[in-house]
Length: 603
Image (cartoon, rainbow, N blue to C red):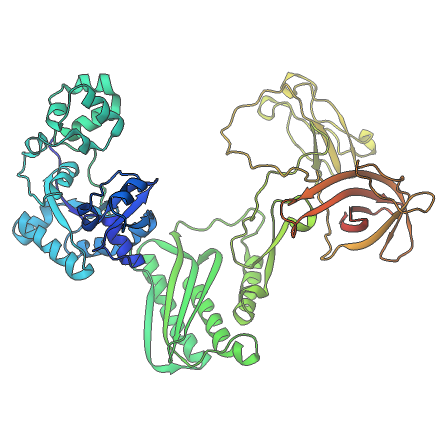
Protein backbone atom coordinates (compact mmCIF):
# COMPACT_ATOMS: atom_id res chain seq x y z
CA UNK A 1 0.00 0.00 0.00
CA UNK A 2 1.28 3.44 -0.94
CA UNK A 3 2.30 5.45 2.10
CA UNK A 4 0.15 8.43 3.08
CA UNK A 5 1.33 12.03 2.96
CA UNK A 6 3.00 13.28 6.12
CA UNK A 7 0.28 15.45 7.66
CA UNK A 8 0.12 18.08 10.38
CA UNK A 9 -3.33 18.38 11.99
CA UNK A 10 -4.51 21.25 14.20
CA UNK A 11 -7.25 20.28 16.67
CA UNK A 12 -9.09 22.75 18.90
CA UNK A 13 -10.68 20.72 21.73
CA UNK A 14 -14.39 21.21 22.44
CA UNK A 15 -14.69 23.65 19.56
CA UNK A 16 -18.52 24.02 19.64
CA UNK A 17 -18.18 25.19 23.24
CA UNK A 18 -15.33 27.56 22.38
CA UNK A 19 -17.30 28.96 19.42
CA UNK A 20 -20.29 29.58 21.69
CA UNK A 21 -17.98 31.49 24.03
CA UNK A 22 -16.54 33.58 21.18
CA UNK A 23 -19.83 34.38 19.43
CA UNK A 24 -22.54 34.12 22.09
CA UNK A 25 -20.53 35.10 25.17
CA UNK A 26 -21.03 31.79 27.00
CA UNK A 27 -18.52 31.31 29.86
CA UNK A 28 -16.63 28.16 28.86
CA UNK A 29 -15.05 27.74 32.33
CA UNK A 30 -18.48 26.83 33.69
CA UNK A 31 -20.37 23.57 32.99
CA UNK A 32 -21.47 24.05 29.36
CA UNK A 33 -22.82 21.48 26.89
CA UNK A 34 -23.72 21.91 23.23
CA UNK A 35 -26.67 19.75 22.17
CA UNK A 36 -27.66 18.42 18.76
CA UNK A 37 -30.64 16.15 18.34
CA UNK A 38 -31.28 16.27 22.12
CA UNK A 39 -27.87 14.67 22.78
CA UNK A 40 -24.59 16.14 23.99
CA UNK A 41 -22.33 17.01 21.06
CA UNK A 42 -19.55 18.68 23.08
CA UNK A 43 -19.04 19.83 26.65
CA UNK A 44 -16.57 21.84 28.70
CA UNK A 45 -14.02 20.50 31.19
CA UNK A 46 -16.19 21.62 34.10
CA UNK A 47 -19.13 19.65 32.69
CA UNK A 48 -16.97 16.56 32.23
CA UNK A 49 -15.90 16.76 35.86
CA UNK A 50 -19.59 16.57 36.77
CA UNK A 51 -20.04 13.40 34.73
CA UNK A 52 -21.38 14.85 31.47
CA UNK A 53 -20.21 12.89 28.44
CA UNK A 54 -20.70 13.13 24.71
CA UNK A 55 -23.79 11.28 23.53
CA UNK A 56 -25.82 11.65 26.72
CA UNK A 57 -29.43 12.69 26.44
CA UNK A 58 -30.31 16.15 27.69
CA UNK A 59 -32.31 14.93 30.67
CA UNK A 60 -29.54 12.61 31.81
CA UNK A 61 -26.87 15.28 31.36
CA UNK A 62 -28.89 17.80 33.38
CA UNK A 63 -29.51 15.14 35.99
CA UNK A 64 -25.77 14.65 36.44
CA UNK A 65 -25.10 18.41 36.41
CA UNK A 66 -28.14 20.54 37.40
CA UNK A 67 -26.28 23.81 36.78
CA UNK A 68 -25.40 22.77 33.20
CA UNK A 69 -25.61 25.61 30.66
CA UNK A 70 -27.43 24.32 27.57
CA UNK A 71 -26.41 25.65 24.14
CA UNK A 72 -28.00 24.53 20.87
CA UNK A 73 -25.65 23.48 18.09
CA UNK A 74 -25.13 26.04 15.30
CA UNK A 75 -22.80 24.89 12.48
CA UNK A 76 -22.68 28.39 11.03
CA UNK A 77 -21.50 29.82 14.35
CA UNK A 78 -18.77 27.18 14.58
CA UNK A 79 -17.55 27.90 11.05
CA UNK A 80 -17.52 31.69 11.50
CA UNK A 81 -15.60 31.47 14.75
CA UNK A 82 -13.06 29.06 13.24
CA UNK A 83 -12.14 31.29 10.31
CA UNK A 84 -9.70 33.47 12.33
CA UNK A 85 -7.98 30.31 13.59
CA UNK A 86 -7.47 29.07 10.03
CA UNK A 87 -6.15 32.48 9.03
CA UNK A 88 -3.67 32.34 11.93
CA UNK A 89 -2.48 28.88 10.85
CA UNK A 90 -2.05 30.16 7.29
CA UNK A 91 0.33 32.79 8.62
CA UNK A 92 2.73 29.92 9.39
CA UNK A 93 1.74 27.09 7.01
CA UNK A 94 0.65 27.28 3.39
CA UNK A 95 -2.02 25.04 1.90
CA UNK A 96 -4.42 24.51 4.80
CA UNK A 97 -7.49 22.29 4.44
CA UNK A 98 -10.42 22.74 6.82
CA UNK A 99 -11.73 19.28 7.68
CA UNK A 100 -14.52 20.60 9.90
CA UNK A 101 -14.95 23.55 12.27
CA UNK A 102 -12.28 23.06 14.92
CA UNK A 103 -9.98 20.87 12.80
CA UNK A 104 -7.67 21.78 9.92
CA UNK A 105 -4.71 20.02 8.33
CA UNK A 106 -1.75 20.70 6.06
CA UNK A 107 1.24 18.87 4.63
CA UNK A 108 4.08 19.10 7.16
CA UNK A 109 7.02 18.81 4.79
CA UNK A 110 7.21 22.51 3.90
CA UNK A 111 6.98 24.04 7.39
CA UNK A 112 9.28 21.33 8.83
CA UNK A 113 12.01 22.22 6.36
CA UNK A 114 11.48 25.95 6.84
CA UNK A 115 11.51 25.96 10.66
CA UNK A 116 14.05 23.18 11.05
CA UNK A 117 11.88 20.30 12.23
CA UNK A 118 8.34 19.06 12.72
CA UNK A 119 8.29 19.72 16.45
CA UNK A 120 9.46 23.32 16.03
CA UNK A 121 6.81 23.91 13.34
CA UNK A 122 4.10 22.53 15.62
CA UNK A 123 5.19 24.78 18.48
CA UNK A 124 5.19 27.79 16.18
CA UNK A 125 1.60 27.09 15.07
CA UNK A 126 0.38 26.68 18.66
CA UNK A 127 1.97 30.01 19.61
CA UNK A 128 0.54 31.81 16.57
CA UNK A 129 -3.01 30.60 17.24
CA UNK A 130 -2.75 31.51 20.91
CA UNK A 131 -1.43 35.02 20.18
CA UNK A 132 -3.79 35.81 17.31
CA UNK A 133 -7.01 34.22 18.56
CA UNK A 134 -6.48 33.40 22.27
CA UNK A 135 -7.52 29.82 21.49
CA UNK A 136 -5.83 26.66 22.70
CA UNK A 137 -5.02 23.98 20.15
CA UNK A 138 -3.14 20.70 19.93
CA UNK A 139 -1.01 19.40 17.07
CA UNK A 140 -0.75 15.86 15.79
CA UNK A 141 1.69 14.76 13.08
CA UNK A 142 1.54 11.37 11.38
CA UNK A 143 1.21 9.65 8.01
CA UNK A 144 -2.26 10.61 6.82
CA UNK A 145 -4.92 12.91 8.23
CA UNK A 146 -6.72 10.13 10.12
CA UNK A 147 -3.65 9.03 12.08
CA UNK A 148 -2.69 12.68 12.64
CA UNK A 149 -6.14 13.35 14.09
CA UNK A 150 -5.74 10.49 16.58
CA UNK A 151 -2.25 11.75 17.46
CA UNK A 152 -3.57 15.30 18.01
CA UNK A 153 -5.71 14.05 20.92
CA UNK A 154 -2.52 13.62 22.92
CA UNK A 155 -0.35 16.14 21.07
CA UNK A 156 1.93 13.41 19.73
CA UNK A 157 4.28 13.27 16.75
CA UNK A 158 4.30 9.79 15.18
CA UNK A 159 7.47 8.82 13.37
CA UNK A 160 7.29 8.31 9.63
CA UNK A 161 6.18 4.78 8.71
CA UNK A 162 4.93 4.02 12.25
CA UNK A 163 1.28 5.07 11.85
CA UNK A 164 -0.03 1.51 11.57
CA UNK A 165 1.68 0.47 14.80
CA UNK A 166 0.45 3.65 16.48
CA UNK A 167 -3.16 2.92 15.50
CA UNK A 168 -3.08 -0.77 16.37
CA UNK A 169 -4.22 -0.27 19.97
CA UNK A 170 -6.82 2.42 19.25
CA UNK A 171 -10.45 1.29 19.81
CA UNK A 172 -12.44 0.53 16.68
CA UNK A 173 -14.92 3.31 17.59
CA UNK A 174 -12.37 5.88 16.40
CA UNK A 175 -13.56 5.23 12.83
CA UNK A 176 -16.80 7.10 13.73
CA UNK A 177 -18.87 4.69 11.62
CA UNK A 178 -21.52 3.47 14.08
CA UNK A 179 -23.05 0.78 11.88
CA UNK A 180 -19.71 -0.67 10.80
CA UNK A 181 -18.09 -0.50 14.22
CA UNK A 182 -21.09 -2.13 15.91
CA UNK A 183 -20.88 -5.04 13.47
CA UNK A 184 -17.11 -5.36 13.93
CA UNK A 185 -17.46 -5.44 17.71
CA UNK A 186 -19.99 -8.26 17.46
CA UNK A 187 -17.52 -10.11 15.25
CA UNK A 188 -14.76 -9.72 17.84
CA UNK A 189 -12.83 -6.90 16.13
CA UNK A 190 -12.33 -4.34 18.91
CA UNK A 191 -9.21 -2.38 17.85
CA UNK A 192 -7.96 -0.81 14.66
CA UNK A 193 -5.06 -3.29 14.68
CA UNK A 194 -7.48 -6.23 14.61
CA UNK A 195 -9.32 -4.66 11.69
CA UNK A 196 -6.11 -3.84 9.80
CA UNK A 197 -4.97 -7.47 10.12
CA UNK A 198 -7.88 -8.67 7.97
CA UNK A 199 -7.17 -9.23 4.24
CA UNK A 200 -8.27 -6.18 2.20
CA UNK A 201 -10.04 -8.34 -0.41
CA UNK A 202 -12.13 -10.10 2.22
CA UNK A 203 -13.02 -6.77 3.85
CA UNK A 204 -14.22 -5.41 0.50
CA UNK A 205 -16.30 -8.53 -0.13
CA UNK A 206 -17.89 -8.58 3.31
CA UNK A 207 -18.28 -4.89 4.19
CA UNK A 208 -18.36 -3.19 0.79
CA UNK A 209 -16.68 -0.01 -0.36
CA UNK A 210 -17.22 1.88 2.89
CA UNK A 211 -15.62 -0.97 4.81
CA UNK A 212 -12.64 -0.98 2.44
CA UNK A 213 -12.07 2.76 3.04
CA UNK A 214 -12.26 2.25 6.79
CA UNK A 215 -9.79 -0.65 6.52
CA UNK A 216 -7.37 1.63 4.68
CA UNK A 217 -7.59 4.20 7.48
CA UNK A 218 -7.03 1.54 10.14
CA UNK A 219 -3.94 0.38 8.25
CA UNK A 220 -2.33 3.82 8.50
CA UNK A 221 -3.30 4.96 5.02
CA UNK A 222 -5.47 7.75 3.76
CA UNK A 223 -8.57 7.81 1.57
CA UNK A 224 -7.61 10.90 -0.41
CA UNK A 225 -4.93 13.57 -0.58
CA UNK A 226 -5.40 16.86 1.18
CA UNK A 227 -7.58 19.37 -0.65
CA UNK A 228 -5.82 22.54 0.40
CA UNK A 229 -7.87 25.58 1.30
CA UNK A 230 -7.13 28.48 -0.98
CA UNK A 231 -7.26 31.72 1.01
CA UNK A 232 -9.96 34.00 -0.40
CA UNK A 233 -8.38 37.02 -2.09
CA UNK A 234 -9.03 40.38 -0.52
CA UNK A 235 -10.67 42.08 -3.48
CA UNK A 236 -11.98 45.18 -1.72
CA UNK A 237 -10.15 48.48 -2.18
CA UNK A 238 -10.14 51.27 0.39
CA UNK A 239 -8.69 54.74 0.74
CA UNK A 240 -8.59 57.19 3.64
CA UNK A 241 -8.33 60.93 2.93
CA UNK A 242 -6.70 63.59 5.02
CA UNK A 243 -8.95 66.31 3.63
CA UNK A 244 -12.70 65.93 3.93
CA UNK A 245 -14.51 65.19 0.65
CA UNK A 246 -17.50 67.52 0.66
CA UNK A 247 -17.66 68.37 -3.07
CA UNK A 248 -19.05 66.01 -5.68
CA UNK A 249 -16.28 66.60 -8.24
CA UNK A 250 -13.51 65.91 -5.72
CA UNK A 251 -15.27 62.83 -4.38
CA UNK A 252 -15.99 61.56 -7.91
CA UNK A 253 -12.30 61.86 -8.86
CA UNK A 254 -11.31 59.91 -5.75
CA UNK A 255 -13.94 57.32 -6.56
CA UNK A 256 -12.65 56.89 -10.12
CA UNK A 257 -9.15 56.14 -8.83
CA UNK A 258 -10.59 53.50 -6.49
CA UNK A 259 -12.71 52.05 -9.32
CA UNK A 260 -9.66 51.59 -11.54
CA UNK A 261 -7.79 49.87 -8.70
CA UNK A 262 -10.73 47.54 -8.08
CA UNK A 263 -11.03 46.66 -11.77
CA UNK A 264 -7.30 45.92 -12.02
CA UNK A 265 -7.46 43.69 -8.94
CA UNK A 266 -10.42 41.76 -10.32
CA UNK A 267 -8.75 41.37 -13.71
CA UNK A 268 -5.61 39.99 -12.04
CA UNK A 269 -7.74 37.16 -10.60
CA UNK A 270 -9.69 36.63 -13.83
CA UNK A 271 -12.92 37.91 -12.26
CA UNK A 272 -15.59 40.44 -13.09
CA UNK A 273 -17.97 42.30 -10.81
CA UNK A 274 -21.74 42.07 -11.13
CA UNK A 275 -22.73 43.59 -7.77
CA UNK A 276 -20.83 46.47 -6.18
CA UNK A 277 -20.94 47.63 -2.59
CA UNK A 278 -20.01 51.28 -1.90
CA UNK A 279 -19.08 52.19 1.65
CA UNK A 280 -18.32 55.66 2.97
CA UNK A 281 -17.46 57.01 6.40
CA UNK A 282 -17.96 60.66 7.35
CA UNK A 283 -15.66 62.77 9.48
CA UNK A 284 -17.74 62.18 12.62
CA UNK A 285 -18.01 58.40 12.10
CA UNK A 286 -21.33 58.05 10.27
CA UNK A 287 -21.31 54.99 7.97
CA UNK A 288 -23.08 54.97 4.61
CA UNK A 289 -23.55 51.91 2.45
CA UNK A 290 -25.27 51.08 -0.84
CA UNK A 291 -25.22 48.05 -3.14
CA UNK A 292 -25.40 48.46 -6.92
CA UNK A 293 -26.43 45.51 -9.06
CA UNK A 294 -25.94 45.01 -12.78
CA UNK A 295 -27.16 42.34 -15.19
CA UNK A 296 -23.84 42.21 -16.99
CA UNK A 297 -20.25 42.75 -15.93
CA UNK A 298 -19.17 46.11 -14.58
CA UNK A 299 -16.24 47.61 -16.44
CA UNK A 300 -13.85 50.13 -14.93
CA UNK A 301 -15.86 53.01 -16.37
CA UNK A 302 -19.13 51.49 -15.20
CA UNK A 303 -17.79 51.07 -11.67
CA UNK A 304 -16.53 54.66 -11.61
CA UNK A 305 -19.84 55.89 -12.98
CA UNK A 306 -21.85 54.17 -10.26
CA UNK A 307 -19.51 55.45 -7.59
CA UNK A 308 -19.96 58.99 -8.90
CA UNK A 309 -23.74 58.59 -8.99
CA UNK A 310 -23.83 57.32 -5.43
CA UNK A 311 -21.53 60.03 -4.10
CA UNK A 312 -23.62 62.62 -5.91
CA UNK A 313 -26.72 61.20 -4.26
CA UNK A 314 -25.13 61.25 -0.82
CA UNK A 315 -23.60 64.72 -1.03
CA UNK A 316 -26.14 66.68 -3.09
CA UNK A 317 -29.31 64.61 -3.11
CA UNK A 318 -29.91 65.40 0.54
CA UNK A 319 -29.79 69.11 -0.17
CA UNK A 320 -32.74 68.67 -2.48
CA UNK A 321 -34.73 67.12 0.33
CA UNK A 322 -34.63 63.65 -1.16
CA UNK A 323 -32.71 61.66 1.44
CA UNK A 324 -31.08 61.93 4.84
CA UNK A 325 -28.12 64.28 4.72
CA UNK A 326 -24.69 63.03 5.86
CA UNK A 327 -23.58 64.64 9.09
CA UNK A 328 -20.18 65.66 7.64
CA UNK A 329 -17.91 65.24 4.64
CA UNK A 330 -16.45 61.89 3.64
CA UNK A 331 -13.05 60.79 4.92
CA UNK A 332 -12.97 57.17 3.76
CA UNK A 333 -14.23 55.28 0.71
CA UNK A 334 -14.33 51.52 0.22
CA UNK A 335 -15.47 49.51 -2.78
CA UNK A 336 -16.47 45.89 -2.15
CA UNK A 337 -17.17 43.49 -5.06
CA UNK A 338 -20.19 41.83 -3.48
CA UNK A 339 -20.84 39.55 -6.47
CA UNK A 340 -18.05 38.25 -8.72
CA UNK A 341 -17.83 35.62 -11.43
CA UNK A 342 -15.26 34.31 -13.87
CA UNK A 343 -14.69 36.80 -16.66
CA UNK A 344 -15.46 34.66 -19.69
CA UNK A 345 -17.37 37.34 -21.58
CA UNK A 346 -21.03 38.35 -21.65
CA UNK A 347 -23.19 36.91 -24.42
CA UNK A 348 -25.89 39.38 -25.48
CA UNK A 349 -29.42 38.12 -25.92
CA UNK A 350 -30.69 37.06 -29.35
CA UNK A 351 -33.26 39.85 -29.51
CA UNK A 352 -31.07 42.59 -28.05
CA UNK A 353 -32.18 42.46 -24.42
CA UNK A 354 -28.56 43.13 -23.40
CA UNK A 355 -28.02 45.79 -26.06
CA UNK A 356 -27.38 49.53 -25.99
CA UNK A 357 -31.01 50.46 -25.36
CA UNK A 358 -31.23 48.31 -22.25
CA UNK A 359 -27.89 49.66 -21.02
CA UNK A 360 -29.04 53.28 -21.44
CA UNK A 361 -32.25 52.55 -19.60
CA UNK A 362 -30.35 50.80 -16.83
CA UNK A 363 -28.01 53.75 -16.41
CA UNK A 364 -30.93 56.19 -16.25
CA UNK A 365 -32.84 54.12 -13.70
CA UNK A 366 -29.71 53.58 -11.62
CA UNK A 367 -29.05 57.31 -11.50
CA UNK A 368 -32.61 57.96 -10.35
CA UNK A 369 -32.11 55.36 -7.62
CA UNK A 370 -28.89 57.02 -6.57
CA UNK A 371 -30.71 60.32 -6.09
CA UNK A 372 -34.07 59.16 -4.74
CA UNK A 373 -33.27 55.78 -3.20
CA UNK A 374 -33.65 52.19 -4.42
CA UNK A 375 -37.44 52.17 -3.93
CA UNK A 376 -37.87 55.00 -6.42
CA UNK A 377 -37.78 52.68 -9.46
CA UNK A 378 -39.71 49.42 -9.22
CA UNK A 379 -40.22 46.57 -11.67
CA UNK A 380 -42.95 43.89 -11.53
CA UNK A 381 -42.26 40.22 -10.92
CA UNK A 382 -44.91 37.64 -11.72
CA UNK A 383 -45.27 34.85 -9.17
CA UNK A 384 -47.80 32.47 -7.73
CA UNK A 385 -51.29 33.27 -6.55
CA UNK A 386 -54.93 32.54 -7.19
CA UNK A 387 -55.99 35.99 -8.39
CA UNK A 388 -54.55 38.62 -10.66
CA UNK A 389 -54.07 41.14 -7.85
CA UNK A 390 -51.78 38.95 -5.70
CA UNK A 391 -49.53 37.49 -8.42
CA UNK A 392 -47.50 40.65 -9.10
CA UNK A 393 -44.77 41.83 -6.71
CA UNK A 394 -42.83 45.09 -7.17
CA UNK A 395 -39.06 44.92 -6.53
CA UNK A 396 -36.43 47.68 -6.83
CA UNK A 397 -34.80 47.98 -10.23
CA UNK A 398 -31.59 45.95 -10.37
CA UNK A 399 -32.61 43.48 -7.64
CA UNK A 400 -33.01 39.83 -8.43
CA UNK A 401 -36.34 39.34 -10.20
CA UNK A 402 -37.17 36.01 -8.58
CA UNK A 403 -40.80 35.25 -7.67
CA UNK A 404 -41.45 35.23 -3.94
CA UNK A 405 -43.97 32.42 -4.40
CA UNK A 406 -43.00 30.36 -7.48
CA UNK A 407 -45.61 28.16 -9.07
CA UNK A 408 -46.19 26.01 -12.11
CA UNK A 409 -47.29 27.40 -15.46
CA UNK A 410 -50.97 28.06 -16.00
CA UNK A 411 -52.93 25.13 -17.30
CA UNK A 412 -54.44 25.16 -20.80
CA UNK A 413 -58.18 25.92 -20.81
CA UNK A 414 -58.95 22.70 -22.70
CA UNK A 415 -56.96 19.56 -21.78
CA UNK A 416 -54.98 18.23 -24.74
CA UNK A 417 -55.28 21.47 -26.75
CA UNK A 418 -52.37 23.92 -26.96
CA UNK A 419 -52.95 27.55 -27.94
CA UNK A 420 -50.06 28.93 -30.04
CA UNK A 421 -49.95 32.62 -31.07
CA UNK A 422 -48.90 33.33 -34.67
CA UNK A 423 -46.41 36.17 -34.77
CA UNK A 424 -46.52 36.66 -38.55
CA UNK A 425 -49.63 36.62 -40.80
CA UNK A 426 -47.59 35.49 -43.77
CA UNK A 427 -46.19 32.15 -44.81
CA UNK A 428 -43.92 30.65 -42.15
CA UNK A 429 -41.91 27.50 -42.75
CA UNK A 430 -42.04 25.10 -39.81
CA UNK A 431 -40.53 22.07 -41.53
CA UNK A 432 -40.01 20.42 -44.85
CA UNK A 433 -41.87 17.26 -44.01
CA UNK A 434 -38.72 15.20 -43.88
CA UNK A 435 -37.47 13.02 -41.07
CA UNK A 436 -35.35 15.85 -39.66
CA UNK A 437 -38.51 17.89 -38.96
CA UNK A 438 -40.63 14.93 -37.89
CA UNK A 439 -42.91 15.35 -40.88
CA UNK A 440 -44.09 18.89 -40.09
CA UNK A 441 -44.95 21.13 -43.04
CA UNK A 442 -46.63 24.55 -43.27
CA UNK A 443 -48.49 24.78 -46.59
CA UNK A 444 -50.62 27.89 -46.25
CA UNK A 445 -50.84 31.06 -44.21
CA UNK A 446 -54.49 30.71 -43.27
CA UNK A 447 -55.63 33.18 -45.91
CA UNK A 448 -58.38 32.91 -48.51
CA UNK A 449 -56.15 30.89 -50.82
CA UNK A 450 -56.04 28.05 -48.33
CA UNK A 451 -59.60 28.56 -47.05
CA UNK A 452 -58.33 29.60 -43.62
CA UNK A 453 -56.56 26.31 -42.99
CA UNK A 454 -53.03 25.62 -41.79
CA UNK A 455 -51.46 22.23 -42.37
CA UNK A 456 -49.74 20.99 -39.21
CA UNK A 457 -48.98 17.43 -40.26
CA UNK A 458 -49.54 15.00 -43.04
CA UNK A 459 -51.39 12.48 -40.92
CA UNK A 460 -48.64 9.92 -41.23
CA UNK A 461 -46.79 8.05 -38.53
CA UNK A 462 -44.16 10.77 -38.20
CA UNK A 463 -46.79 13.26 -37.01
CA UNK A 464 -48.79 10.73 -35.01
CA UNK A 465 -51.86 11.26 -37.18
CA UNK A 466 -52.12 15.02 -36.58
CA UNK A 467 -54.13 16.65 -39.36
CA UNK A 468 -55.37 20.10 -40.41
CA UNK A 469 -56.72 22.36 -37.69
CA UNK A 470 -58.46 25.69 -38.37
CA UNK A 471 -56.88 29.08 -37.75
CA UNK A 472 -58.76 32.15 -36.58
CA UNK A 473 -57.79 35.59 -35.23
CA UNK A 474 -54.06 34.93 -34.98
CA UNK A 475 -54.19 31.63 -33.09
CA UNK A 476 -53.64 28.08 -34.24
CA UNK A 477 -55.19 25.21 -32.29
CA UNK A 478 -52.88 22.20 -32.41
CA UNK A 479 -54.09 18.87 -31.10
CA UNK A 480 -51.55 17.14 -28.89
CA UNK A 481 -51.48 13.43 -29.68
CA UNK A 482 -51.81 11.30 -26.54
CA UNK A 483 -49.93 8.32 -27.95
CA UNK A 484 -46.97 10.18 -29.44
CA UNK A 485 -43.65 8.83 -28.22
CA UNK A 486 -41.04 11.32 -27.19
CA UNK A 487 -37.49 10.98 -26.05
CA UNK A 488 -37.25 11.09 -22.31
CA UNK A 489 -35.31 14.09 -21.07
CA UNK A 490 -34.33 14.63 -17.45
CA UNK A 491 -36.28 17.61 -16.19
CA UNK A 492 -36.22 19.42 -12.87
CA UNK A 493 -38.92 18.69 -10.35
CA UNK A 494 -42.16 20.48 -11.31
CA UNK A 495 -43.25 23.45 -9.28
CA UNK A 496 -46.39 23.02 -7.19
CA UNK A 497 -49.65 24.31 -8.71
CA UNK A 498 -51.99 26.79 -7.08
CA UNK A 499 -55.39 25.16 -6.37
CA UNK A 500 -58.16 27.47 -7.48
CA UNK A 501 -55.96 29.40 -9.89
CA UNK A 502 -57.75 30.62 -13.02
CA UNK A 503 -56.67 28.93 -16.28
CA UNK A 504 -55.20 30.68 -19.30
CA UNK A 505 -55.37 33.34 -20.64
CA UNK A 506 -54.21 35.81 -17.99
CA UNK A 507 -55.86 39.22 -17.62
CA UNK A 508 -54.12 42.07 -19.42
CA UNK A 509 -54.95 44.96 -17.06
CA UNK A 510 -55.23 44.76 -13.28
CA UNK A 511 -56.39 48.01 -11.63
CA UNK A 512 -54.64 49.13 -8.47
CA UNK A 513 -57.98 49.02 -6.65
CA UNK A 514 -60.92 46.84 -7.75
CA UNK A 515 -63.79 48.78 -9.29
CA UNK A 516 -67.21 48.55 -7.62
CA UNK A 517 -69.87 47.01 -9.84
CA UNK A 518 -73.39 45.59 -9.80
CA UNK A 519 -74.85 42.64 -11.75
CA UNK A 520 -78.58 42.36 -12.50
CA UNK A 521 -80.77 39.67 -14.01
CA UNK A 522 -83.39 40.18 -16.74
CA UNK A 523 -85.93 41.35 -14.17
CA UNK A 524 -83.53 44.01 -12.86
CA UNK A 525 -82.90 42.28 -9.55
CA UNK A 526 -79.34 42.03 -8.13
CA UNK A 527 -77.63 38.72 -8.76
CA UNK A 528 -76.10 36.88 -5.83
CA UNK A 529 -74.68 33.48 -4.94
CA UNK A 530 -76.24 31.11 -2.41
CA UNK A 531 -74.39 28.97 0.13
CA UNK A 532 -74.63 26.08 -2.36
CA UNK A 533 -72.86 28.23 -4.98
CA UNK A 534 -76.01 28.67 -7.06
CA UNK A 535 -76.88 31.97 -8.74
CA UNK A 536 -80.06 33.72 -7.71
CA UNK A 537 -80.58 34.69 -11.35
CA UNK A 538 -78.94 34.66 -14.76
CA UNK A 539 -76.60 37.68 -15.22
CA UNK A 540 -78.05 40.00 -17.86
CA UNK A 541 -76.55 43.49 -17.33
CA UNK A 542 -73.46 44.93 -15.63
CA UNK A 543 -73.01 48.41 -14.23
CA UNK A 544 -69.49 49.57 -13.30
CA UNK A 545 -69.05 52.46 -10.87
CA UNK A 546 -72.42 54.19 -11.53
CA UNK A 547 -72.01 54.09 -15.31
CA UNK A 548 -74.62 53.06 -17.82
CA UNK A 549 -75.50 49.34 -17.65
CA UNK A 550 -74.02 47.12 -20.38
CA UNK A 551 -75.57 43.89 -21.57
CA UNK A 552 -73.79 40.63 -20.68
CA UNK A 553 -73.51 38.30 -23.67
CA UNK A 554 -71.66 35.46 -21.95
CA UNK A 555 -70.41 34.45 -18.53
CA UNK A 556 -68.68 31.59 -16.73
CA UNK A 557 -68.51 30.72 -13.04
CA UNK A 558 -68.73 30.81 -10.15
CA UNK A 559 -65.27 29.66 -9.00
CA UNK A 560 -65.23 29.85 -5.20
CA UNK A 561 -62.10 30.75 -3.20
CA UNK A 562 -61.84 30.52 0.59
CA UNK A 563 -58.33 31.75 1.47
CA UNK A 564 -56.56 31.82 4.85
CA UNK A 565 -59.69 30.77 6.76
CA UNK A 566 -57.49 29.96 9.76
CA UNK A 567 -56.47 33.65 10.17
CA UNK A 568 -59.58 35.78 10.79
CA UNK A 569 -57.74 39.02 10.07
CA UNK A 570 -56.48 37.79 6.67
CA UNK A 571 -59.33 35.50 5.58
CA UNK A 572 -60.98 36.21 2.24
CA UNK A 573 -63.97 34.36 0.78
CA UNK A 574 -65.28 35.16 -2.67
CA UNK A 575 -66.73 33.78 -5.88
CA UNK A 576 -65.15 34.71 -9.23
CA UNK A 577 -66.78 35.11 -12.64
CA UNK A 578 -65.61 35.76 -16.19
CA UNK A 579 -68.05 37.92 -18.16
CA UNK A 580 -68.20 39.06 -21.78
CA UNK A 581 -70.02 42.34 -22.46
CA UNK A 582 -71.89 43.51 -25.51
CA UNK A 583 -69.29 46.19 -26.24
CA UNK A 584 -66.59 43.50 -26.63
CA UNK A 585 -64.93 43.82 -23.24
CA UNK A 586 -64.08 40.75 -21.15
CA UNK A 587 -63.80 41.13 -17.39
CA UNK A 588 -62.90 39.17 -14.29
CA UNK A 589 -65.34 39.89 -11.46
CA UNK A 590 -65.65 38.67 -7.89
CA UNK A 591 -68.51 38.62 -5.42
CA UNK A 592 -67.44 39.19 -1.81
CA UNK A 593 -69.88 39.75 1.04
CA UNK A 594 -72.67 40.59 -1.38
CA UNK A 595 -70.59 43.22 -3.26
CA UNK A 596 -69.43 42.85 -6.87
CA UNK A 597 -65.92 44.02 -7.82
CA UNK A 598 -64.12 44.20 -11.17
CA UNK A 599 -60.68 42.70 -10.52
CA UNK A 600 -59.16 42.68 -14.02
CA UNK A 601 -59.75 43.23 -17.74
CA UNK A 602 -58.92 40.81 -20.54
CA UNK A 603 -57.36 42.02 -23.76
